[in-house]
Amino acid sequence: MFITALSGAAIALAISAPPGPVAMETIRRGLRGGFGPALRVQLGSIIGDLTWCLAALMGLAPLMQVAWIRIALGVIGVGVLLYLGGLGIHDALKPPAASTTAAFENKGAFRSGLWISMANPMAVGYWLGVGGTLVATGVIGASLPQTTAFVLGFVAAVFVWALVMALAVRFGQQWMTPALFRVVTLACGLTLIFFGLSLASQMLVNGLNG
Image 1 (cartoon, rainbow, N blue to C red):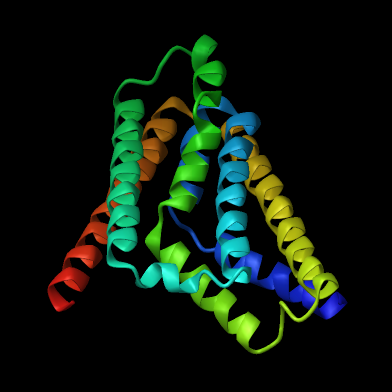
Image 2 (image 1 turned 180 degrees about the vertical axis):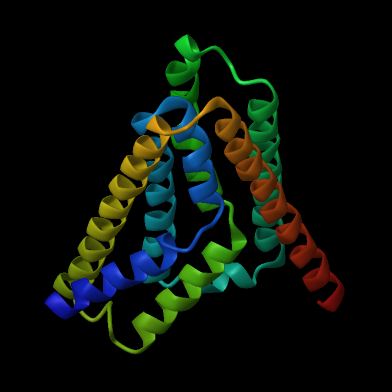
């Protein structure tokens, strides 16, 4: 069971550690609001990842073969990324007053992380594909204790990563000058838009090839 839990933790870190939309949104909100908003984005992402993890364990991988489901998730994902990227650019050009920053950034932080995770077709495809493989090979799904150990390992790892990310952003906030704040926030916004356009391009290419 310990090895199974480690497998869950390893997969969690493989998903969470690479820079992506969730990391950009965590940085964007954390630089303005501090530890709380950054952690909320991460927690929302965790719920999204856990949802698709459980879907994979339940054998729902064929869902991603349904064209309208893939398209719907893709459209939502592109919209979310472009919207959040636009907010980042707006923040860089016209940051709000410091006295209202924390309260403002707490609003919607959890939902942002959740929507990015839930509506990202690449993350969904990864989870349903990897989860299906793990079930087929007997790594998980053979027994309730085994599956529970995997999920617990996954959840523990993503929670640790969420705390590390939120603390790192909070620490970086202390050293942030107004000019650097604008540059980093603008970079996060542009990166989110890049992710959104890349996702839209992939959808278009797949649609033409399909």
